[in-house]
Image (tube, rainbow, N blue to C red):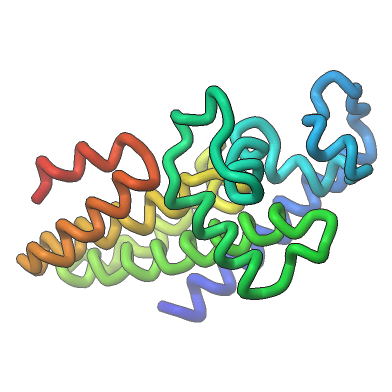
Length: 194
């Protein structure tokens, strides 16, 4: 299962990077959509596209803490970006926070897929695992899972909650749901599962 997950992830990620490089080559970008944070650094579009929109806020929070109007962005994801950035020494790179965010999101996605496989084993439906992986990777907004967004980290904690609850391990399920809630507001919905 592990080799299948990693091989599928690598193939999907290479395809995504190829699409982004093609788009960066053939689709012109205008300055009005480039976040000021990246424009000042002179980053090409194929780099900053992974941290566009909400990613700018997550990077800003990870780097400098909260500012005005950033309260909707929950703290766990920016904290993990900062932790990875400081641990790996990526703060010396111009795009270090983007790389750190992608590392956090990619690792969270890989672990989530592994937990989904374990959940299917618990439910005695392991034959569906290939379909689950295909659905995750082929979903139109699946690229969010490796961008600098909190989606993959939330998916990880949601999978941990489901798996722990299925095994009737209520304390780990509650802890995972609490971490999911620190990632995004939707984590409160996991309380009903527990």
